[in-house]
Image 1: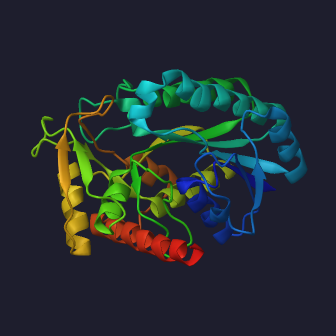
Image 2: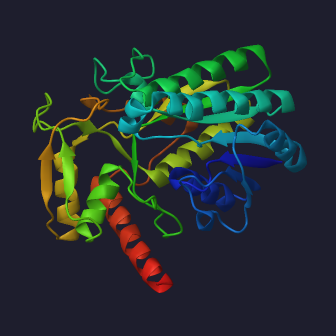
Image 3: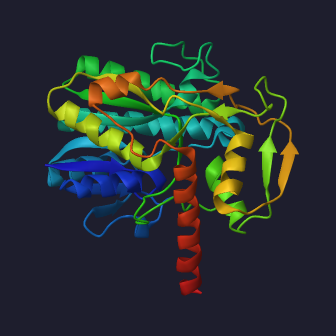
Length: 331
């Protein structure tokens, strides 16, 4: 019995691989390394280079390794990019996920966990937002994820497949033991960008939009530590294996911070100042979105360990400094 982690060489996926190994699981990673790194995959996990849409490869792997669960992270995640290239996002996030779901059904994989997003809500009418809120994505990224949620729901209704959809809010931070972290060049995650600016890797940073209907005019998001998110996946898998029914749940903390509040936190934690450039809004950005995480806590028994903005920021900054040392050693 083994777990297949798609996109397991990426930021969130690599944290999940470590989390599974920590609890003694046999782990197989499938990743084409478009944004991930082979060094981010622990030696204890098998790394297969390939695409989730390669059904022959996926199905051979399922059969060979006795896969009983798929945790699906692979996909494209940058909101403005999805606005510029919607068809690319529908291909990578929706069409290829359909192929993966079909392979799971054909091979009799009983458990499937899908990495979705709070972007399926758009800008919700109420805050915090619960899973039953209206689904009105404001970008092709959000729509591509919602389409996959629908396919998974319908496939599970027709076949012997139980799933968990986890709608992530804004993921940040790094493994406290510095085993892995956000390493993508040109990353767009706010805390990653601010941490790079604070450590001198960027010449300042841009803030996109200061005229939103929020207290300081910048967007508000719910930030969740990546290790807490991995814990939520592990708990969701345990629930499915124990016979739990299919479910969709939010993964966030239930409190929001504006862009400027996050930047202030990075400056406070690091004791360093850096240039902030105020600019126009970006297409596809929701005004404010904060999770109601009650369902995940009730159904999975999930209890966050790092529910603190300064802790998230400090781990992100420590990872940037770790990368600096690691990269200087390669020079």
